[in-house]
Amino acid sequence: MVETKKSAPAAPEKSAQTVLDVLYTILSSISGMLKGNKVLTALRLNNGEFLYCLCFSVVFVYTFALTSMYIVPLSIRMAFTTVTAVITAIMWYKILLLDVEDKWDLIRYVTPVALGSILAMLAAKYSLNSFLSLYYLLIVGSRKVDFRKIAWVNLALGGFGMALVTVLSQVGVLPDLVYQTTRGARHSLGIIYPTDYAAHVFFLLAMYFWLRRGKLRWFELIVYGVIAGLLYYFCSTNLDVACILMLMVLSALLRLKGVQKWAGWHKDLLVYFLPAAAVTVIVVIMLFNSELGLSAWIHDHILSLYMRLDICHHMFYVYFPKLFGQFVPDIGNGGSTVPVPDEKYSFIDISYVRILLKNGLVTLVSLLLMCTHFVRRRVNKGDLAAAAVFVVITINCAVAHHFLDFSYSVFLLTLFSDFSAFDSHTEPRRLAAGK
Image 1 (cartoon, rainbow, N blue to C red):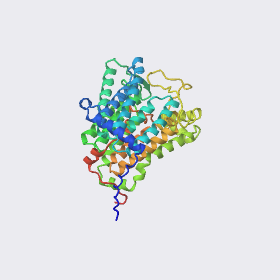
Image 2: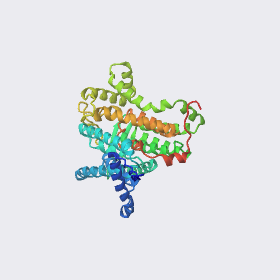
Image 3: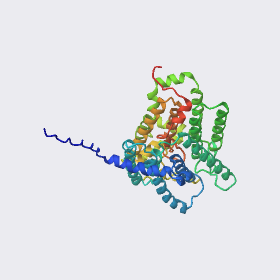
Image 4: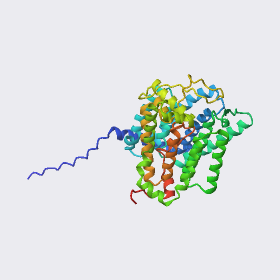
C-alpha cells in the first residue's frame, strides 16, 4: 500500500476587519498614548472632566461679562473667535479620544454627535449666532462629566460674578442703571437690566436647590426668602421672585411622603410639562388678539406680560419661523435707561418663541426632545428635584428669554452628564406607577 501524506490543516483565516474596527484601533492606540503620557497627566490634559470644566468656565465667564455693564473690549471679543475654535477642538479631542470606550461608541455616540454638529452649524450660519455650535458641543460633550462638578463650577463662578458686579455697581466702577416706575426705582446693580439681574440669581438658586436634592434646610429657606425680598425691593421683578418662592414651596413638598407616590402616578405630567408648555405658549402667541377681553384684562393687570405677548405676536409675522433660523435683531431696553421707541423695539423675551424664530424649528424641537428624554430618565431614577427644577424653569422661560443662554442657565449642560455618583449618594428608588 502506498501511504499518502496527510496535508497540514489550513491556518484559520483572519476575520476581515471592518472600517469601524480600524478606526477604533487607531483612536484607542492614540488614546492609550495620551492617557499614559506623564506630562499630559501632570497638566491634566488627558482628564476629560478637567478639560470640560475648563472650557465651560471660559465660556461662562465671557458670556456672563456680556450681560454685565462692563464693556468688553473689542480686542477681547475678536480674540474670543479664536478661543471658540480652540474650545471646539478640545471638545472633539475629548469626545473622540477620551470618551470612546469601545467600537460601538463610534456608532451610538460619535456618529449622532457629528450629525447633530452639522445641524448646529447650519443653525449657527442662518441665525448668525456663532455660539450655537459651541453650545451644542458643550451640551453633548458633558458625557462622562460628573453633574456635581458642572453645578459647583456654575455656582462658584456665578456667585462670585454676581457679588463682584453688585459691589462694583455700588462704588461707581460699574453703572447701576435705575429705571423709574410707578412702583418705585428698579436697580440693575451692574447687570444690563433689573430682570436680568434677578434671573442670574434665580438660576443660581435653582442649581443649588437641585444639588440639595430639593430638600433645603430651614436656614436655607430663610436665605431664599430674604433674597426674594431683596430682589423684589431693589429690582421690582415679579417673575424671578415668584420662581424662587416656587422653589421654596417645592422644597417643602418634596419632604412629604405622599409626593413620591403622587409622582409615580403622574410621571407623564412631569415628563411632558416642558414640551406641552412650549407648544401652548407658541400657539397662544400666534392666536393672540389685542382686542379680546382677556387681552384687555392682561393689559390692565399684567402690562409687562401683555407687551411681551403683543411684541412676540408681531414678530411672528415679520419673521416667519424657518427650519434653521434667521437673523432677528435684538433691540431692547437693556444697557441704557433711555427707552427704545416702540417702532424699533424687536427684542423677543419669551424663550420658546425666541428659539423658534432666531435659531429655527430644528433647534427648538431638538432641545425639547433632549430635555423630555432627560427628565424622564431623572424621574425614573427618583430624582424629583430635577423634575421640579425643570418645571419651574419651564414656567420662567414661558415669559423670559434665558432658556438657551449659558450665562444664566446651564441646566442644558446636564442633559448628558454623569449622575452615577449623585444617584448612588441619594440611593433613590425607581418610581413605579401604582406603588
